Length: 195
Image (cartoon, rainbow, N blue to C red; front, side, top):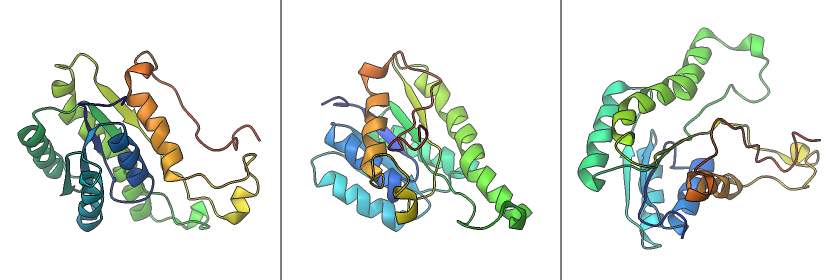
């Protein structure tokens, strides 16, 4: 198992791509911290992780709130004593199909806060703890729209991407096999970028 003995945090791990990442990391031996604004979803996923024999904790967390990040870090260190892997998965996008010009300032502020500010807050809070580790792993994810049938018809692989497709890529990047990979964009898109 590539992540045996590691403690991983996957923001937004209560559903969608985050849930896929959590499941893949648990299958590879990681214990999981699942902060999600939807606490009920996070708790459900934590129970699924425990069902495969891994430890998991779910916390209702607003990743745009410094107070919530501080509470989260305190809980993680109290429960596990350390954190080895951070996957910044929480993300939002504009409403599908809505022209950019119809976005409000509030829409922009929400997207920026969840997708950018949260990454800053987590990195700032966790860097001192990660620097004490020999092989810390920060991984960032960019949210993308879920493919519909029309989009999957354009994908060279001819199938929709699954949360687990992203999850296995995250496992690899968090593993020792990827210890020398940094500052790269890994497109897990069935060849869409090449099409």
